[in-house]
Image 1: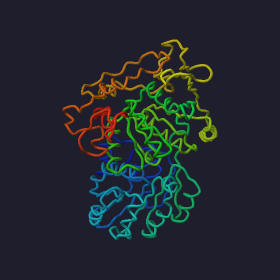
Image 2: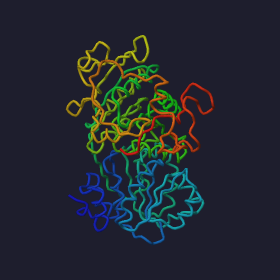
Image 3: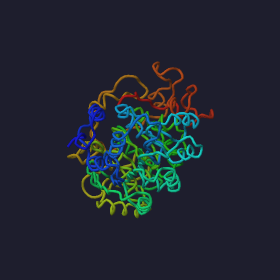
Image 4: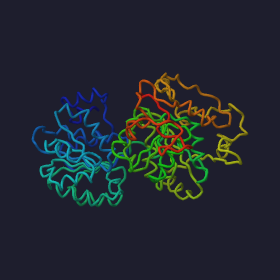
Length: 504
């Protein structure tokens, strides 16, 4: 099976080959032929199954550039997802001379209105900003041919049902509608019944709900000890790229500050950031200039970054669907991944619900908090097997070993190791050598040592004005380390944090 046999031909098929895409995924095999007939279609598929190209390819194949009308609209719940889809569309649109415009908040509305006046062929938008343009009269959807609602379950979960319905009312009744959703709650079903015409129903499992490419682990701790437990896990498993999920924006901010104060290469992603800062943070994370990304569920929805080795659920998700979406950030494209959930005693009910939802009992490890500092903490797994307590013999098992594809953290390739640079320096690191685990967490540099290790000045190649957040947290000159932005002492300034080179 290839894309040409599905009806994708000509220069668009050539563009796919240049991107290294020759064999369609199951969701693409089932969706593209039906979509090309103009029929409405409902597709239930998990993130990471290739559903973006399942609707982009038929849209572009049917495009008639130069008509002076918006021919297709893709509506997404978040800015990040709109940006991601725009990037994918940009790889293929030139093959059919189609114009693509993203429309989301955080950008100059007047500049967007000017571009919309040129009638792009394909608009990729979030509900709020699109309705702003509809009310201003700067976009005309009266001749729209195809409407795509992506991540429909999340869209309605975020309370966008009134906005979605208002957008639909500004489109023609004879449009083609394609609805994509990872889950199919009652609200999505009712929306489909109300606005779709005899749609074909496509359900693609993609990956098993247990996500066999991901080792899943529950670490039992307490709310008070959760932060120290997370730090020990980070030092133990040494993730290449990791996403850490928090329940709220405030918790994400506080955790980011705490991890940064411990010398971690970390930044945050949530709704309180400006669009420019969010884009800058994501750019650094995709380029491996950032090792740890602390995010809320909404901000990370649809996040697709190559090379994420670990997901940490700092706050436990409240249902199996959210759990699957979170840990699906790792173990993608045939790679192995690891998902670690920190669970306090009060989380027992949510944990049972997750295990029932995925049909599997998760491996458990207990974090012990003996008297003393966090450095003296031990960890042990219940029963036989893994024990991370201080009574283990040194070297009895290497924690990063991959036990037959199901163990430990996925080992980094030599190529990944060589591409990562030493924090604060400019030379290339050799691949990290695995060391036997001694039963103690990795040594932590003192505050003074960290200041020296991570560097108090930007390297010459970075320029005098560079700082940790030169692209994300606003411009201006770099501040001295060890002082906060208000001029006081104590907590390290975030602009003096560790840096890594761009390439992954």
